[in-house]
Image (cartoon, rainbow, N blue to C red):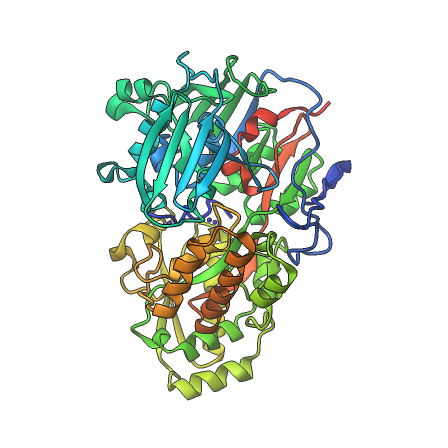
Length: 551
């Protein structure tokens, strides 16, 4: 969900395994859950996907981490983007937990039971302490999730709770959720920021200042330390943590918006590591000798988001023509510095890891080809009577993944008879494309890297349901809506994924977005630290607690 800064999380109220330097990749071997084994995502042969970097060999006093932007708040209600979640995942915990292998595990809830299609019961761990010394109870869960549900709070995760009919304390350490209708997605989102639990008394005491100063009053392995606005933020190890003790006594996040400055800081040892590596820096970091650049599953696809179907792009033949004409492999080579794979799928293969083989074939067979065919594209433009017509794509210097993809779309359009106009958006205004309809005025499409917050293709495919937040073009198809509703109501994973395979094929046939590439996550660690997971689990897993001494 973007060279960084990647695009903000395109969510509800808003929206990588090279083993250099002698480090061996930790290959994921499960065919049933988690990210696929190396190469299964179509990754380039000279890098391999791993779930993690080698385990730490001991504790350290501190480590420093590069971050492309400073969060305006760390209130979990607003944790919809990389910067907030990368920090918050180490301070606040959810009822369930995403693992480095992108599977679901118990979190603050020691177990979750599903006695009937409309009920989820969460039994909490006993004796869990908040950073202020208070003890976790069902009251804190009801309060924390209740904040997400309150429309006055404008939570980024509000839609996760649309199907919740009641949220009640059914025991000192038990909370029961009653749903209006079956919802297969709700329990999965309880591992994200949607399921975060904070101290009721702590949040109420902080009032409007919660998330911007003082304590976050959560239960994670780190507590919030000094926050120097515009400069850095510290996390301090929480010695009262219920789980495994963090290996570092302190983690320091340095805010470095300039991509070259971030790279320079990593190369020069000013920071020990970072996620969201600028793609143009891959080569320098890989060959530097000062550390290791590793890759893991990102559940991320680079796409061209279609935002306007009232002009030429309202004809599906024009959308197909641009898709067929696009040089995907050239973009992967230049825009992603070779670390990725051209795709005709809006969803990653890893998102389908729980699907039976027959379902995976149904989801991916017959999707648009990744090889370009200019003759076919020109034919489609002629049939649509679109030759010489103008479409506009947003571009930005926010990162070469954006600027080079926009340029690639322009080149493709020019070669098949369209006039593709580039509209430059300032880096600090690019996020508005996801949240502000006025920012999209005069724009027909824009580059978007979308990441799934759960390991389920419906996280992306539901964006095309009528009225969905990211359905910017206003696509409407009752049959599509019905399939989304059926998938959401189906608990059985194999059956649900079978329905989602039909959604994938429908979205592909209509070219609702133009899929371009799968993009793994990237993490750089210098030689003094190790232990960080390589997958996108860092959004909701306390990854910093695993970082420790490399020697």
